[in-house]
Image 1 (tube, rainbow, N blue to C red):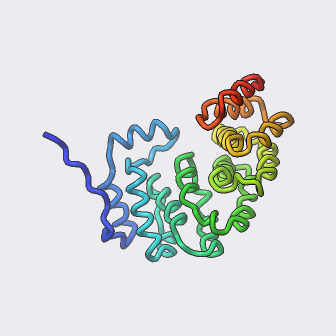
Image 2: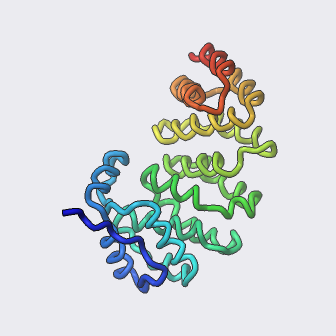
Image 3: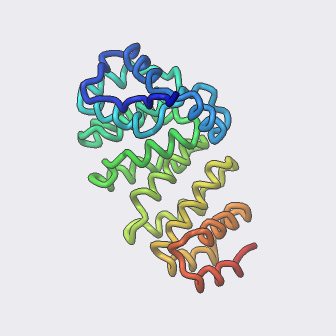
Length: 242
């Protein structure tokens, strides 16, 4: 007998409190998906198994309502409940000065790459107020916490790889020396995107950079994996490995 697929959340779903939000998430949860996703996120033991598109639908609904009250009282009982907070902040249509206090409270809750990266892709306020957000990110780029640094780096690669910021980005990447795997991977990912958009400038940076060998070689690897870099450039990059 064919299993009936769970329906996508509707616009009129009841999100009137934490208990109801949790009930809605549990109704959307898929055990097999949760088990699969847990394998991709080391150390995460609180996953319900709700797919990202469904979480985004809920977050958009919350962002249109009394989002401040929701965020003040939101629970952190599962990964999805934490991620829902980050997405809701991202979907809120308000000045950055209004969003910032809630982001301050949320960022220390980031404990894995999935929550970090999914939140970053949602924070479109960075496009509307780039200068304010850029200044805000400096404290996290200079943090000693692995996922706070990753948050800053992933925000940069999503919104700030431009002529205006490219030199400052190189300076920051050169000054980040945190040993965490997810920081090093973010730096490498960031530089591969920099190379795609600014190959000449990134190539010159790589000649004199202070990156550790692992991060440097991982950045080269990610560039070689990119379909947006020419074969000729890839051949030159292969000769740069340490």
